[in-house]
Structures are given as C-alpha cells and as structure tokens.
Image (cartoon, rainbow, N blue to C red; front, side, top):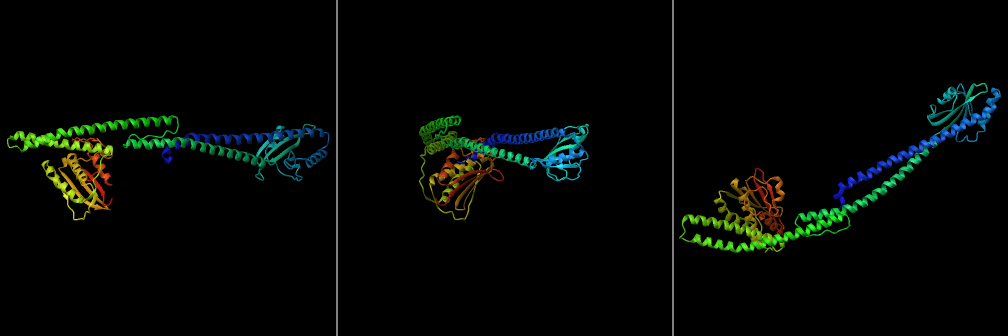
Length: 471
C-alpha cells in the first residue's frame, strides 16, 4: 500500500518540522556569515589603524628635518615597505597629492576617498570602507595625520588594501555554512521520511482494514507493528472487529432461527386461509377479512424468505443452480405475472417489447426471477404514487440490460449510496424489512453482474441490472 494516502500528514510534518529547521538553518548561515564578515573586517581595520598609528609615531622622530629631507625619508620608507604585496602604503600631502607609494609609482592626483580630508581636519585616524571612486574596486583605507614639529599637519600616512580577498573568504565561509546546512537538512529529511513512513505504513494498513470492516468483512485482524499509540489503536480496532463479528453472527443466527420458526405458523395460516376462501359457506364480510389475512400472510412469507436468503448470504451458504436459460423469457413471464397484481393496486406496468435478439445466458433462473419480482415490488411500493412502472430488456456491449423505472418521488441523493445496504430503509415510509435490495444485489453479483439505482430524468427511480452474456 502506497504511503501517498498520508500525504496530508507528510505535508504537515514537512512544514512544521523540516520547514522550521530550514528557516532556523538559513538564519544561522546568515548570522555566521555576517558575524564572520564583521569580525574579519573589524580585525583588518584594527590592524591597519594600529599600523598607521605606529608608523606615524615612528616618523615623529624625524620632525627636526627640513621638509625636503622629511619627504625623502617618506619616499625611502615607502620603497622599503615589506608588505607591499598585500597593503599599499601612501604618503599624501594636504593638497591631496600623492607624495610616495609603496607601489613605486606616484603622481600628482586628487584625493580619492573622503577619510583623507577628515584625518587632516580632525587630526585623528580615520577609516574608509567602500568602492574606489576611480576604479570601482572595493577597498579599505586608513589615514593618519602627519603633524610637523610646529603643530602643522603636513599630510597623511595612508594604508590601502583591496577587500577582494576578504570578500572571497567571506563568500567561501558562507558557502561552507550552506553546504553544512544542506547536509543537515538532508539528514533531517531522510530521518523524517523514515520516521513518517514508520507511522504512515501501519496507519494506512489500519485505514484499509477499517474500510474492509465497514464494508462487512467483520473479524479480520490487523498486524501490530509497534508497541506504541499506533499499536494500541490496532489492538482497539482488532477488538472492535472481533466484537462486531460476534454480534453479527449472533444477529444472523437469531434471524435464521426466527425465520425458520415463523415458516411453520405462516404455512398453516396460508393453508387454512386458502381452505376458507375455497369454502362456499363463508359470507362476504368473512371472505373479505380472510383475503386480507391471506395477502398479509403471503407478504410475511416473502419477508421470511428474504431473511433466510440474507442469512445464507451472510454465512456463505447461498448456492446458485447455474444452467443455460432464456433470460428474456424469464423476465417477460415475471412482468406479465406481476401486471395483474399491480393493476389491482391502480398501477400500470408498461413493458417495452423489442425485436432485438436476446441470447440465452448462464444463470440461476429461480434466483433471477426472485430479483425481478423484488425489483418490481420495490417499484410499486416506493414509486406507486406515480401510478406507472416501466420495464425493458436489451443488449449492450456484451451485456443483457434489464431496466425497471417508477415515477415516484425518487431517492434523496444522500441516500443513493446506502439503499443497497442491509436493513437500510432511509426516509421511505413503505413497509418492508430493508434487505430485499441487499439480497438482489448479492444475487446479481454472484452472476458476475451489477445492480445500480439512480434518479431518473423527469422523476422517479431507475434500476438497472447488467448481466454478462458470457461468464
């Protein structure tokens, strides 16, 4: 059984568990990446500020030099700067001109970033982080003012580095975090899938068996997979199935015993009523009363026979005496026999005769007559107010099709799926046991056919019996 039946539970589980894990994981990845980037940039900025302060302090020892010697010392220091491959050291005068650079090339140029002027103005170390206006490259720059012995700011010492490598490192850390997160989510998905399968498989089995029990397969047992809440549910359903089976057997045994007990007095009543009716010494009022007794006795006898057939079906004791029979003749004989009975009740029975060749089929003629009589009787009882019943027989796609239609009020739509269930009478006020259709449906199924009921167009109920020509 596919676990797709539990897709609602699966979806809720994924949303409530994996969804939360995914959201938290993404927040963690973002937090780790941002924290790493912040720390990385802060560490680099702190290092560059320390370098700038230290170098500026170192150059304070040269304040006794004249300007030319001072600038020459800056150029010499820039050329001998050991970390020129990672960081550029610049000396910039107050006009924004590049005096010296560790890259070995300088020219008169305008200031490129705003922290130079801030360092000159505030006489403190200032930092810039962003894009170089000239090249568009992302950089970090730290400028520290150079103060001459007379207190005059004569320029700034500036450290500049590209953040490309830092950005790559941050992206690399983010990708590693995402990879770890993806592995964690995959593990959660696998473990969740295994866990939810361990729930859905026994749950689907419980659903299937519960449907079988509701369909009449009483007594079947579920296999208990786990000793947990689902196992307790399986135990409860197993116990329910056993008790229903026991109650069903008790009910069937009671109906069977009662039906057999009723047959003897009914036979006696029928026999004596027929004897009295055949007597010439009975006055008219008595004869009328005896006719009522005889008719009601026949009705009770039919109900008892239905009950006996029902118990045989329940116990699996109903057998068919299959032979090749002219199903058309059997149906027409039943229709013609029932016509007079319906006429007495003020109901006209219209048989749609056809010239179509209806082949003989393998069936139990006695049981099929029972089906036809029961369906005609139902049409009269439940649709008698329409004062008309139509009957027809035809061939269609390798099947013999028998249709019986009344012109009554029809069946409420919500009752159509239930009318063939045993003892179900629904909202009908007609007398009966509620098992006639259940017996008919079982007999038709035993012949490999189908019996369907539906509301006919224009009102009334249409019953259709399909019997295969070849079994």
